Length: 141
Image 1: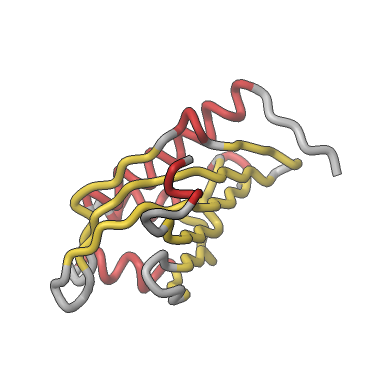
Image 2 (image 1 turned 180 degrees about the vertical axis):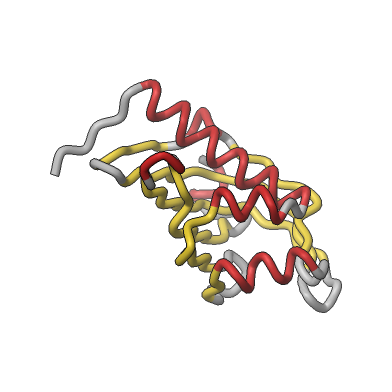
């Protein structure tokens, strides 16, 4: 498999990445519906739960899950493209409020897998977050 990344691919995939984070913060489910693939899956940073597209949109709509703040670091991101698949490995610092109302702050490394769907363009197929624990080497990177 030929893995390449042009500057255009990098800019486009990082732009879609940013749109995803911005839509989470705004709880903009209409925007997320455009960004997320029909069979999107999220592996949560705060415990590894697997959440599908419908469930994610639902908890954002009803306010059960909120993301007051998400900072990403696009200059650090590794972006790759293999055919119609784009992969972004990056880092975030985020605050989110869970279903019990408890606020969490976490740093994470994440992997986002995008697929190119014809005229629709890039869609986020899968998102996996891993917490960076304070004091670890990964937290200092």
